[in-house]
Image (cartoon, rainbow, N blue to C red; front, side, top):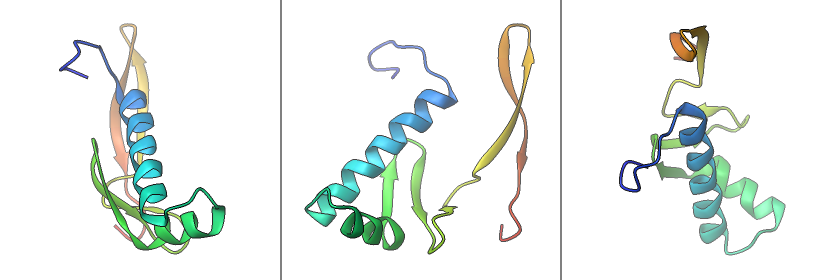
Length: 88
């Protein structure tokens, strides 16, 4: 985003990472069919703008903290605390 001088926030980054994961999974599966895509998503790791991430057998995110709490301060949403899941 900096390269193109476009302002970004965490939602932009998350959306971009989601598209990167989808594209890599489709390339690996060599199809857009649901079952092969799910298999790839559950077993592979994906390089994204947010780092290397993956998903466990339940579909939960691995490789990074999945949740953040935001508050509205001075006209901006501000990350205040990152929640830890029981397995982290």
